[in-house]
Image (cartoon, rainbow, N blue to C red; front, side, top):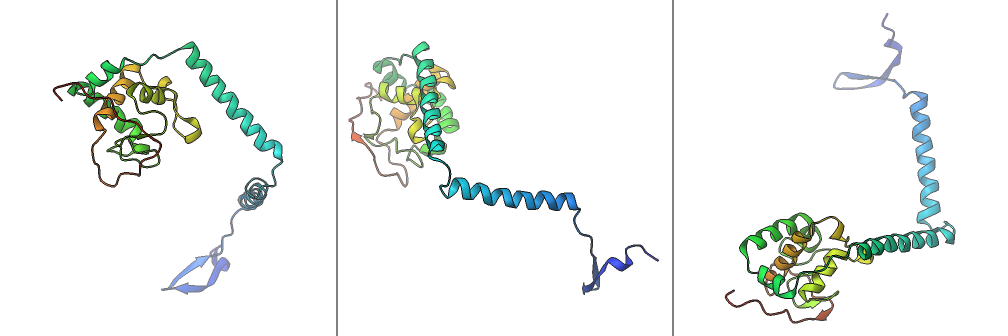
Length: 197
């Protein structure tokens, strides 16, 4: 006699029967413990039963992280190229190609493939949240805007690539991509491009 014969369930589907093989006890214990843990976790943190000190600790850690980042930039200042250089590179085909490649890798996920704005703001109009002059854009890319989710790229991208990205962004100003995000911030007239563009 087959040892599993008495474990067959009574129901059948298209002549196929199922064995009654329960999960091992240790696996069921892990499952039930995970369910209990998730209910307690959600109740404690998501439903605001966490102590007030929890939010204070998070704020202190954020302030400490910003201080470390600022100390790094103070110790390793990244001076932006001159306005003239950034604008001159905004018409240089090789620089624009390098800037477009870096923009696609680093910036497009938030600002859109055509800089039309997605999560991040639109970069093709003349409204800017953190300054629209090319040197201000350079500093924004270097230091980021952590409060709004933009990471500081000054530690991750070589300075010449940051300059190329900024020149590329300047070259896009005034373009009209599909479905641009509405402008945000102050109106800043872009610096004039070099003659011969």
